Length: 336
Figure 1: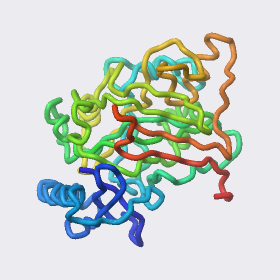
Figure 2: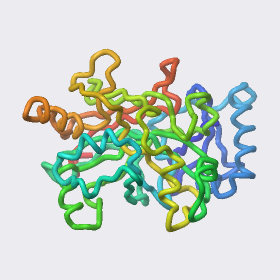
Figure 3: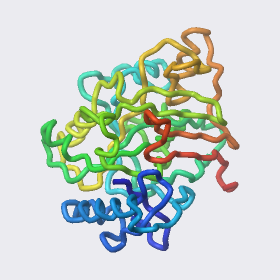
């Protein structure tokens, strides 16, 4: 099934069921007022939501037109947002980026950081620049939402805890990365609100594309309409989502509704921008710049600036985007 959160007067929004083709929705208020409430009682709520989803798809319920502009982040505020580093190709490319240190990059256990989750951005929310010259960057990722996870969880149980799947844009202010890392406590000011696609879907919605706790679909990123990347999220995975959940729960239990990010999706290659043909390209700008420095001696791809538009989506075998898309404008603070 596919679910979304529409804006209303409450901070958690209104839970709705969205048709498989993303054109219509029906209120799920009779099951749960918002997504966190549904997750908290998943064993009871999921079958009822699935039945509502079936009726909507089969035309038993007319539904209303679904507009992504009305959607908030599926969980507008979450108990926990943890971003992992599932793709070593990404880490390898940013080893020479300012603020990155070899000692902080590992390949035996995934790197993770705990991001702000009290105010997560929706698919059409602006990327707001609080200051000039922060070198804003997008990061296209897969994300999952879990049920409750016990401390010290095993791989199989971790995989079974995954309730929902979507994509996110883990925005970074690259100029602040070095300050954050050198402070010794990890990312803070360098990471503004993460934005999410309008739809979350249960793993079965992806068919064979979801296997081994990874999603075997392309995630495409555009800046001002130009394709920057189209890597396959199921390829070159060093740590799958079950691995990331196991690592996150190493010393603590994870609350129901925890969001886990895959890290910036990256495939191994030696290409530069522009993307040609089926080349994977890049899911963030800093990777493209690092590759340019290695080959040309200097970076030429600029970071984002006010007025730019970032567009991120999944693409299935039919060319559809199964969880909708993220489409954001970059704006200066006070101009939004």
